[in-house]
Image (cartoon, rainbow over all chains, first blue to last red; front, side, top):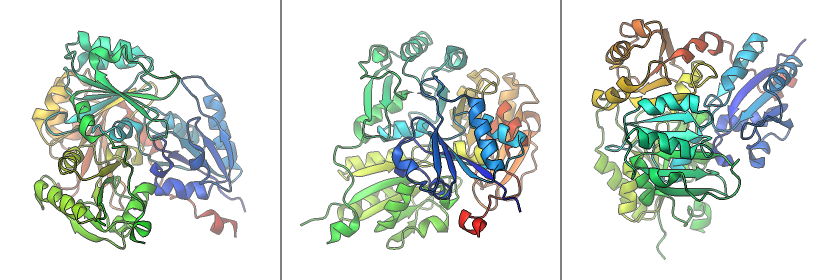
Length: 257
Length: 257
């Protein structure tokens, strides 16, 4: 009897291993092989104790393993009857090539399933105290990649100033170009702007300023770090909604002792 | 000694109780009081066995409990030292008034934390086989509410045709108006369009068609059902990426017997 393999395309969420879904944890716990992105944290991998684990992801556009190789590894393992988890940062279908991987699996006749994750596009702002929508400030939001001007340019130049919250993933390197573009489009110079670095990790850092000061924002260290830009009036709410340094309380059991 | 209460604003994800995060499950397990939206499923509430549970959410714009009442209940319970979970569909900061609730808590001096969830804006398309972004088809996506033309109109009329994937939450009732608006803006009549009903539930149903046929889409039953519109070339991928009727395999333990 041949055992049929299976592939799960799983979102690992924005960084905090507690922000994986319960389903992600279950399929990891049951996996034979995990192929994971560079920024997936060790605590998430620890949820797959029985699996071989290979880091295959890219970082800041530099391939560690070619996309075709990732797809071939998934297909080959599934054909050998393995239970494969492709663990991707954030959500697998938000700027993550999850669609391409799904097409490759379908073309190879390998059964697969997508397990949506918490996307950094919403969670990075949220964890910095910024709701992407808020009554009276923004009734929608736009998510684009900062990787190529050819991609974000036509959209951002057409959008009426402050019509929706703009979230730019992988936007650190292009922050000056994007600020310039929006200012020329007529966005107010004082439009609140944020840069969220390392969301949902211990090393998280949020810069808060305006569209005018964004280009010169003094950002720490590694420009390869995943950075999320958030642009629009909702950013002003961070002044009130940003988490206090006081963390959540101890578990109830302890508190009741 | 006074015990300090605490409020967690928690995203319950798109419907499937396995798509709650591990953190959502933990804080529910430890909660004294859960105030939950109408569409939160019973299996999610079962994660809070020690808590009093009150349904407070709205459905299709009709309030069951007034927003001020929800906020007062949270504040009062926290002041009595309770561990309160405000459990909201999807992500608390995506069209969910989570920001307003956070502001009310901050104004009352109640400590709170946001626990991001899997947003239906990404997961409803994904579970129907539609990646909101895909190389060569869409490098970004726009999320708007279909609730009021005054909100989505200015954005959708400015967007170049097919520039990004458009996701409309609560969009069922406005699907004809939105299709008309985009067609007048110059979107091709053959632009692939989808309506996802009851995403991540057993009753899920996806309609696939075009922008031209969207207005007349024969949609089943309850127009109050949460419906997500997805508009753009990425919708064509559902033909290949939509889940097969064959479900995921049995757990490894069983398969290995």
